[in-house]
Image 1 (cartoon, rainbow, N blue to C red):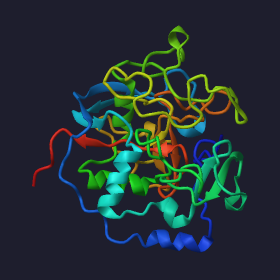
Image 2: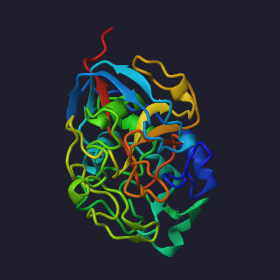
Image 3: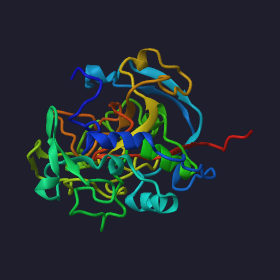
Image 4: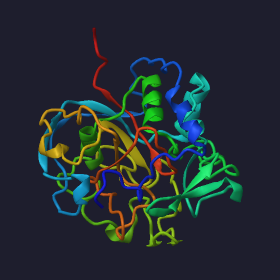
Length: 325
């Protein structure tokens, strides 16, 4: 892969109606900031770790090298991804309208589509397993005939970076930096592939929600799920965080640059000053080593801030204490 964005992972926004793209710019008043909150979060003591891919398994265009030392102060981070129930509370309180709703469509994996044929608007270039579906959004994740009934404790999907940032602000939190995300995802294990070690299936047991079978047409669902799993499926890592490999991609606060690691600050890096895409981490239920082994803790990808799909979610972070004047 040579481009900055990787459509196999998460396709970029594709409005149902080109005119709808103008609506996104008119977002209305910014969500009111909530009071500082640590609800649902784990306090991590901070420290130094080796960030990046030490196995040489990353895609060159993703910029997972060089491995470099990073030092972080203590911070809080959500133990799980934000759920459909959490996001519903936010929407009820604020009236927030997601970018997918503004655009009129979002990307759904072809085997999960539950919508009339008239709602199928085409596939993503280079990734035909992604279907742009009219009316797909967080409340209707598979299309107009679907809903989130029975999925309250699944991660919310079809949320853009803009939506995630708005939720975090309302919740009195923020999005994690990319460095914080990787430090937390590793769960205290230094230089390992996954949050639990180097073996994908220790003892023959699945530890994360990724693809099994022949991608993209046959998923044997050996791990129990075709699409999202509950946010507390499997086991937490050594820091008490759930599903930092697979399930859904998670937005970070940073702009993305494939060359950033070569120039990153050692102390609490914040990412590039500007960019066109934001970092996403963790991989998703669609990852498979035949085409996208980005469920490793060092793996990186990106997408534009207004993009959404059926495998993109987020979790929030916070400083150890609220900022003072």
